[in-house]
Amino acid sequence: MRYSRMTVVLSVLLLSAVPAPGQAPVPQPRLGMNLAGLADWNTELPFVDVFRLARSWISQREGAAWGKGPPLRLDEHGWIRELEPGCFAETPLCTIEGGHYPSGRYTLLYEGEGEINLVHAARIAERRPGRLLVDVDAGKGGFFLQIRRTDPRNPIRNIRMIMPGFEDSYRREPFHPAFLKRWRGVACLRFMDWMDTNGSKIVKWEDRPRMEDATWTVKGAPVEILVDLCNRQRADGWFCMPHAADDEYIRNFARYVKEHLDPGLRAYVEYSNEVWNSLFEANRYAVRKAGELKLGDPARPWEGACLYYARRSVEIFDLWEGAFGGKDRLVRVLAWQAAGGPYWLDGMLLARIDASKVDALAIAPYLSFMPRGQPDGKDALTAATVSTWTVDQVMEHCRTRALPECTRWMREAATVAGKYGVRLLCYEAGQHLVGIAGGENNEKLTKLFTQANTSPAMGELYGQYYRAWEAAGGDLLNHFSSVAKASKWGSWGLAEYYDQGPREAPKLKATLEWARSRGQKVSLMDQPAR
Image (cartoon, rainbow, N blue to C red; front, side, top):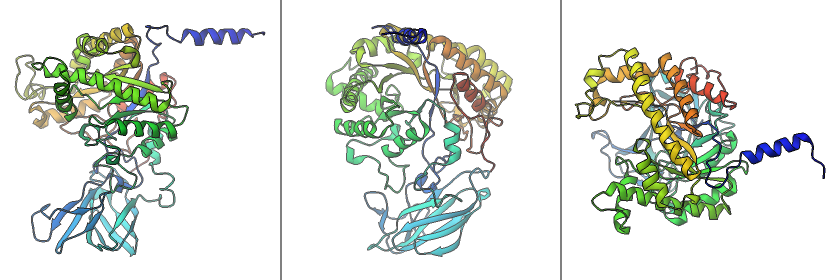
């Protein structure tokens, strides 16, 4: 058989990209994205049906204090079965200030019989059974949808609140086109917040969120919508398995992904999220399980949690591999705290399991600056002190202290990943400027950090940060987060609102430019006008 010179060259290049046993894969730095959590205050507006982001029903009694109505009788999908006399239920929608969501005529569709009302920024223009036309003025803030009366024999259900212009297409095109455009070209979508991972109460498959649920802000988005988004965007999916989910749930979830995710895409699999973090229930659950299984020293429960995390992760990876009939389309991820260094990443994680069961080690090497409300003996930079700084001083601190610190974390993690022949990933990335331990309540500090986050200097710092990740040998980097309004709890979004473009958001511009430099076909075009 004869081979062309080009065929030989390509064969050599392909073979050289395949790591030898125990050798780390050749890194391919690319941009992935953590999508902002689903809530009525979500400013990313991923769905054209805004009722998908409705809050849980609030029970009201006429003449009583707000929110003091009786317990509501709900069906299995969260729709109200019946209301007590003198009571009603309501939920806020689009609680977004500044006009940063579409105004205009919305179409409200529903099934059942009863009476729906809308108040504040929304006014009913036309009413017919099962269909209301609603005029919304986003400049007035959000609005409330109220169920004033519902027939127990045929209760109101399947409510849809469709943005202007999408009534004919929302069934086949559920995602807002601006949302799809913004993130087209990213390599991976991490669904930690969309799956409500940190607050998950899911144990069994029947507990899962459904397409028919009244809202996706309670249990998270269904697997169907996650996979649909990946397929539309041609992006790999990163799925965070609930900390208490049983094996049947894991198998069924994995089977659905195997059967419906485009064969050209991969599934990243992670057990929960930040199981090391004592703020989250997953950590407390892991501590309890470690005690039951007698893992680690009871006097050092944080180590037991790590050992249980590693053990349960491998069990989950095996279940996914069984569902997929192999591991070729899987990326099995161990994720832990970046600042812990080799002691945790190596000694407590990879050294304690069969590392051949793992494809990647993931960290979150944030550009960290977290002034406390009071001195803690380690850092005298309190929120009160930093709040007197200028933006230039904040950025200088980030360049000279935060960037070298997180670069060291990257390099340490890369050394551990190389030792075990696994990829180094970033499960979350970006700046981490936020007050803590009371510092978050310093309004001047919040304003300063918000200004720093929207400054051109932050965009320049992001460029340095991404280059540091490349130099350290990093692979996929998932920014945290996509689009979210700044507050005292942090400025996590690359942009604050769905209608902001790169010209208004230096972090977004720098991030998309880096992705383009890596060959990703992301869009640098601005978003639609308000």
